[in-house]
View: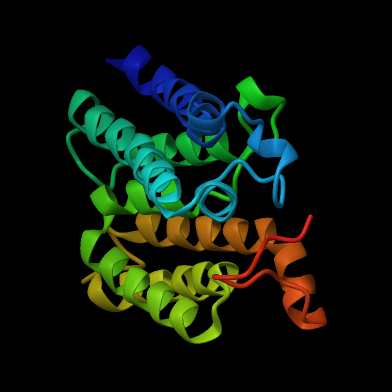
Amino acid sequence: MFMINIISPVISYFIGSIPFGFIVARVAKGIDIRQAGSGNPGATNVWRVMGKKYGILVFILDMMKGFLPVLIFDYVTSGQSRSLFTILCGVGVILGHTFPVFLGFKGGKAAATGCGVFLWLAPLPLFISVAAWLLTTFISRYVSLGSMVGTVVLIISIILLNNEPFGSGLSLTLFSIFISLFLIFRHKSNIKRIINGTENKIGRKTKN
C-alpha cells in the first residue's frame, strides 16, 4: 500500500499528460492544434479552431482525466477523498496537463482538468465555481476571465462550505488555493491581453 501511495501521483501525472486536444485535432482534421489559433492544446482553442462539438469533446475528455485518477486512487489508497495522497494525485494530473511529457512539457491551462479533480474532491463548491465561470464568460465573452473568476469563487466556496476549512479540511483548502493561484499564473498572458483589449472573445475569430 505504501508503494501505491508513493507512485499514484506519478501515474496521475502521466494520465494528465495525455494530450486529448492534440489527439482529437490530429485524428479529426489532420492538424496540429499547436500550430493553429492561439497554439494552446486545450479545449478553448480546439473550440475556436475546429468548432463547438470538438471543443466540448476535448473539455469532457480533459475533465475526465482529472476526475478518474483522483477517484480511483482515492479508493485504492486511503479511501478518504481529502487525504494527502489523493490531493497529490490531483496535483499530479493537473501538472501533467499543463506540462505534458508527450508534448514537450507545453500543455493547456488546466481549467477542464481542474474541474474534474474538484468534481470528486469538492463537488458543491465546484458547481458554484462553474456557475460563476459561465456567468462571467457570458457577460464578458472572455473564457479566460471566466476561468479566473471561477477559480477564486472555488476557494471562497470551499472555505465557507467546509465545517473545518483550516482544521481537518486544511489540505483541501491549501490545495484549492495552490491550484487557483497556479491557474491564474497560467493565464498571465491572457490578463495582459484583456488589459490591452486584444484578448479573443467567444464568437470571434482567433488571432494568432
